[in-house]
Image (cartoon, rainbow, N blue to C red):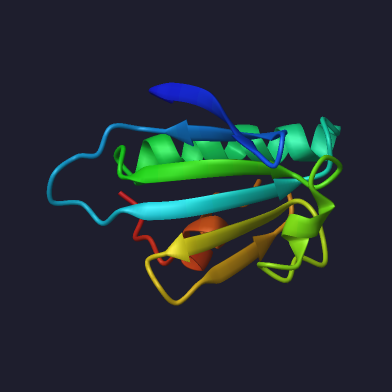
Length: 115
């Protein structure tokens, strides 16, 4: 990833990971909902970073939302299980539940064609 930063919201940190936008590509706005630093959450984050770098060519922004710190944010995207990846942009929104280890399933869920 090109950069990682923390953004404060209501006094709590949200982690953002973004990559420089490449002209001409579709921009993806993704949110990964996790519950702390569990092995499954860490695996989902690692898999997501790999998939984004390989298939989204820098045209993405990922926001990591820890529901242990901000449980109220689960309602906005109707999160019932974790980890859950939400593709907010492009519309319509899509959700992928699990550790994101199946790259093909994630790409289908994001509506991305493999390179």
